[in-house]
Each structure stands twice: as C-alpha cells, then as structure tokens.
Length: 157
Image (cartoon, rainbow, N blue to C red; front, side, top):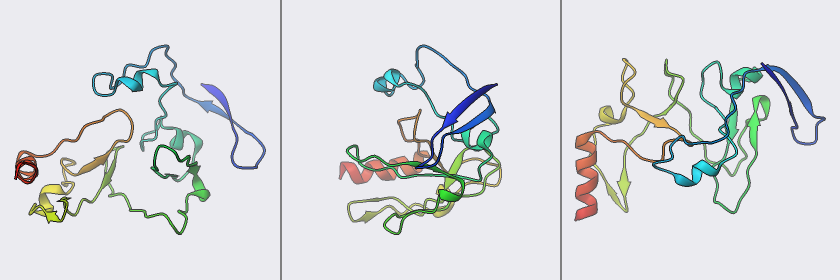
C-alpha cells in the first residue's frame, strides 16, 4: 500500500493513503499493436474493479473527454464529472464485468448504414458480445464474422 498526493483544480493537494500500485521499468502491454505505448510513463487503471484508481479513491465515477491531439482535457472524479454543455456524452450499459460497455446502435460508413441486427451488437445476459470501451491497451477492433463481412463489403464496393 502506498500514499499518493493529488492536486485537483485550485484546491490544496490531497494525500490519499492505502493505494495499491504496481511499478515496473519497461511497459510492454500492447507493444505488438502500439509500439509508442512502450515509451509511456505508466498505465492508469480505470476499470470498475477494486484495484482501479477510481475505486481506490472511493469515487462514484470519472469523466474524461477524448479530444484531438492538440487539446488537453482534465480527468475529473466524483461530483466534478458533469459534462460541459458543449460535450456529447453517452451512458454505459450495466454489466457484471469490470469493463465499460456501450450500447452500439449501428455502424455507418459514409452515408451507408450497415444492416446489422441490434441483437448482434448488444451485450448478452451471459456477459458475451457487446461493445467494450478500451482506450488504452488494445488498439484494434473485434467484430463478429457476419458484422465484419458486411463492413468489408462496403469498403470493397
């Protein structure tokens, strides 16, 4: 267990004790898919499990805006997570998993909406399928075979 000090906005720094943290000297997670990730200073775990930073801080949630490379955006916790009026947001789907799932309604390429049944894209009761948001270690997309075939057909034509 470690003690970390965080600075939030203009507030005084806040020391948080009892944080579980792992350390390493070489980051290789996802190296085969994203070599630049190997040069990162570390990995911040934000899943819904007990060892994620959000859970360890005892916060109810977090908010982060994925913006263009030339823009900085803050990582907000707890009561600060209300999005700005300019931001578009979406709710996560409840899941027994520690991962974050979204309800994907469809896939469009240019003006072509693929005719994929919404049940194909939905999270199943047994915890399979669905759309997982992973903004860090996985830099690829996985689709079911029928969905992939439809997607490729549009790209090829």
